[in-house]
Length: 183
Image 1 (tube, rainbow, N blue to C red):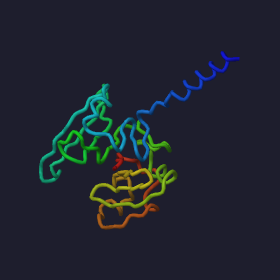
Image 2 (tube, rainbow, N blue to C red):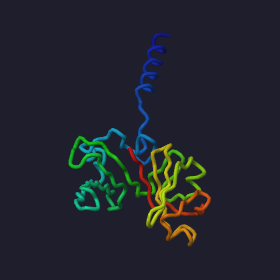
Image 3 (cartoon, one colour):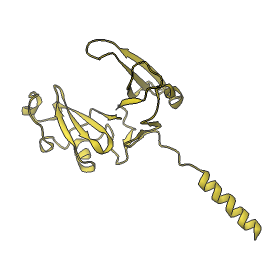
Image 4 (cartoon, rainbow, N blue to C red):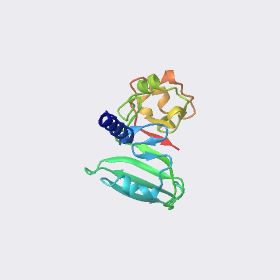
């Protein structure tokens, strides 16, 4: 009887002690794979130990003295572009993460291979912004903004930057160019 209780206690401790491993490609409101909203720049090389971490310093009047960090897999495919909140500060957390690789998916299955219809079906659209070459679809639920090329829109909307674009005007088959998570 004592052996059964001891065995049961050991098995219980093993189940409690086992932590579910984080999917390196899952996106939610507070994490992207192994990155969290509290990840510091100095942690990136250890988080992406099997990938390449490349820091780009952008210093001109259009980039506002910014540093971007690109993450490439071993095959040379760009996975992510990270922008720290503070330039050249290893303790800075990340401000935005640009998702470029289709393996990264939200909890509801949205990736760079998804369409506007997929976004609309799975999330409440917070707002839509019209820019020069793209439209940006904001989803506050996951701190995301999805970029869709204006070439995916009907002709009359492609060249008018002042037009207020509504969700009903965007074709469901419009493809996502990339999307970003902002913390």
